[in-house]
Image 1 (cartoon, one colour):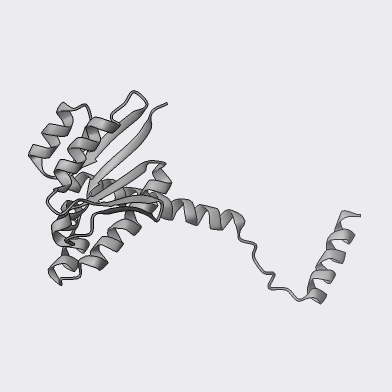
Image 2 (cartoon, rainbow, N blue to C red):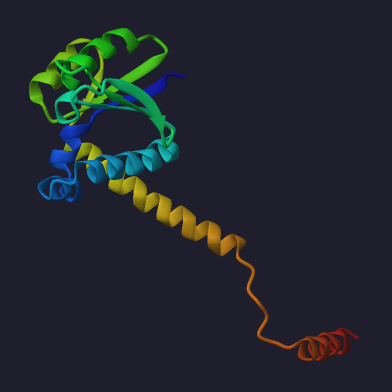
Length: 173
């Protein structure tokens, strides 16, 4: 079975997802990035998919680095390197017989380029809708788990429980 690997153009998602675009308009890019990472982390864990989020360095100049956070790989490109060029190269390196590579971006030129290299493509809107659907599934699964594993406390006192137990024993005789 092939491993799923999703490359996400981070700033593209921030600009396209309503709640993140709102943070961007308020000039709260760090909060927008962190919110994106948190949401994609839940999505990755539930859907069992590896995610690499790529951010252009022009918003955080001189930072080029890669690290893991929330079980995601976060990549800031070199100062003169775009997320698109990084993803294009990575798709060529990662698109193997054992890996199903998907690229999430709304940049149409980028979508066509990665498609030509054998990767699947997904728009920011499609990923947003898929993520929201997964959040709903997580809520439903959590609710079902809690119903199955929650023990209710008895409204009866110990004395009342003992009387009820004796009454049931008498009925069974």
